[in-house]
Each structure stands twice: as C-alpha cells, then as structure tokens.
Image 1 (cartoon, rainbow, N blue to C red):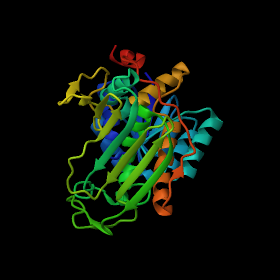
Image 2: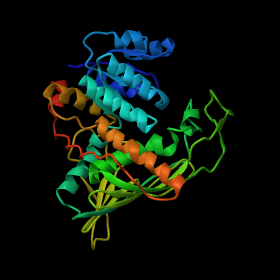
Image 3: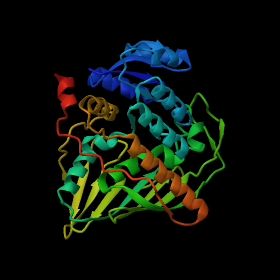
Image 4: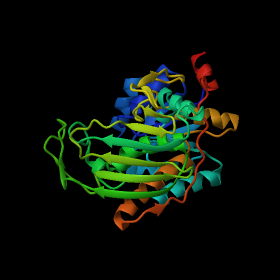
Length: 365
C-alpha cells in the first residue's frame, strides 16, 4: 500500500483521512500544518502522527504528499513538495494564477514527478455512468449543455468564510472546478469562452458562531455567467453564483440529438442519473454502473498512486486542472474585456475509470 503525507488540516482533510482509514486506498504517514495544534487535533481524531510541514517533507518512503492548504498557498506548498522529491496531489484549484499553475507543472516535469489535482468527483459512480452512456451513444450526438451552481454563499455557515470572497475564490474558483472538470470529462476540452461577472454586495456578514457579525469585504465577482465553446463543437452555458437566495435549476444537463441526460451534482460521487428521450413525456432514472457512490474523496489520489506504479496516465491530472484553471481565468478576463477569448491549453478527455480498478481490488483484499 502506498504511503502519503498531508499538509493542511481544513475541513476537507477529514475526508481524505476517512478514505485512508475506511477504504484503505492508501496509508497516511503524517499530517502537518503551520499551526501544530490544528495538526495535533486532526491527528488525534484519526490516529496518525502530527508534525510540521518540514518534518513531513523529510519523511522517507512517501510516494506523494497531499496539499490541502488554502488556495493562496497552493502554489508555494506544491512547489515545496515537488522540490522535496515527492509527487503532489492538490486540492482545487491547482493555483490562483496561471503563472503559478504553469510553474508547478514545469517543476514536476523537470523532476520527473507527477501532479494530481482535485476534484476527483468525476471519477465517482454518477459521472462515470454518464460518461459511459455518452460514449455508448445513448443520447445520440451531444450538442449542448447547461450547468448551474446557484447558492447564497458560504458566509452563513462556514467557520472561516473570508477567503471565499477574495481573488482566486468566489463561486467560479471555489465551485467551478467541479462543474468544469465534469464537463471536460464528458465533452472534451474547451477552446473559447465568453463571460459576464458581477457582485451583488460589497460586504458579507459572517453567521458562524465563531465569527458571527464579522464583516467580510467582497473583492471578487460573486455571480459569473460563462459561454463555453468545446473543441468538438458543442456549446454550454455555465452560471456560478453566491448571489441566489434560491433556485430550482438543474445541476448539469447534456442535450443530444436523441435525448437529454440529467447529470448529478458534480460535487458528489453518486446519482441520480436521469434520461428523457425524444418523444417521451417522463424522465427515467438509470442505474449506476460504476463504483464509488459514497463520498470517496481521495480516489483521484489512489488512481495517481497506482498509475505511478504502473507507468500509465492518471486521470485527475495537473494538465486537466490547468485547463480548468485557464478556462476560469479566461471567463473573468472576457467579462472585463467584453469579448470572447481563446483558451490556449488542451487536454485529452481522461480515460474512463475501470469498473473495478486494480487498486480497489488490492485495497479490499
């Protein structure tokens, strides 16, 4: 079993530690944070060693280190991990700026190391079932898509919401990677975007008990509309918002010449997956045919670890994350400039995940 380390002890760290403990996809040699007390608290919860980042990076026999720090720290920490000689798997986004994202990929290439990046929800049962159905031609030729991430924002419940409203976050950078990664996995790379972006409020008010009443300046757009043109010819509309008190819009729909697929929430691993065929009056719920219906954050990391051992390509790759990062930047640049913009990067659609990947069989014995 591969051994990893974790840097960063935010809420998402529990999901990775839980997968390591319950699904045995990898083992954790230690968890680190600049605030050692936070590392100790998380370590005690899951029975793993706590340490500083420097101590963790000096550990022998680590295959990879997971970067779960806040987005503004992603680039510096990922570069430190690579320079220590370890593969890196980062939470999304890959970096805040395109320059930092490119620097991470270049450093990895120079050292013969791999970069992986969340989200890996597109490897879950729901989105992998959709991928299988599209590849089988169930809806005919895919023509278009819509995607909607509509919320009122995280300040009412999150214990540390300020960073959500700064550059590199907002609804586009915080939640957009789930939707855009799903769309690229289903339809392929994007070659042109158009964007519009606004913010409804100059300040937000924290609601969590630990920060109740604290005023948060809003320094990034909080309602973004994107037009996406795919290399294969499809078009999509994507809206990401922290400014909607309520919505009844679907998460993602894919429109084909023969049917429409209703795609599950890309921030989850399960279903439902539904289809409405041309001429039918009702939606039909389709069975999930792929593994990982429950919260399985870390399967992208497990796939990277296995691919490293096998010498094959991993799916939640740095190249995919960089393409999504560029899409998001070009959307905001298009909104500022008032004109569509080309997306320069390209990435192949990741290969579908095996019905029962070898590393899963190994993990469950």
